Length: 320
Image (cartoon, rainbow, N blue to C red; front, side, top):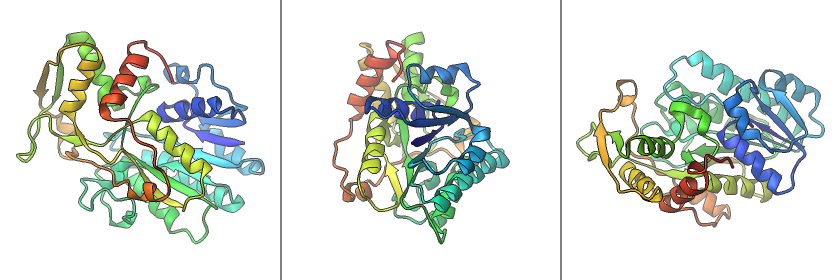
């Protein structure tokens, strides 16, 4: 059996559907299942058992024997949340509890880390950089980096483990995420409502308005990487999950207009005060480690990913 935590969330629910397509139905899913907007992600999914997040650690301690893999994707992901204790509880300590059981019973573990661990990129965006050298910008990034560091330094570890440093992921099933949904999601809905898009103005002289750049990765590429790690003998460690190519927010907005069959009308607004001081102006994953491990599948370009997301999902209000 395979466990998926965060199974009703954006990435977890897409992974659940992907495993169902591969005929894998021996799945234990874990999440808070009291939100109707998230539970829509689970429609037509197949699984053996549904376990509330609060009950899972006790269940796992009692039922490790038949678990062949844990895919730990559940986390508090709000980068504007300032309450450190929330992240310590839900991201750091909860993850330690899962990992400790995996270590004790030698169960492989693949889990969600984050590109937020890289902070402003002072050390670059290389997944071979030790977590202790990184300075995240917020409690969310700290919690992910602290767990990476903890697991990497354990004397005993799972037989295989991979911490996936997700960059800017977009795609279907993120409808419930509100402010934390991808820029493409928000761009689509702003264009639909106003026929225009307002991007954040640059507050740095070395970046023109709209030229802030991120490594945007389509959910279908992310799922392909997880599938590769599940089914190939690769070394344990941290792995970037991006495309290796940064693209501007202007390119993102322009291509969303084009995918909707509309003429681009892009303006600029001030970056909100609560995120301005810690705003990342550039991220780009170094993907050499994953490529060296044998992953050679080409990534969706930003144009291809937006076209697929808009036409197949956003325009149809459909799920993965």
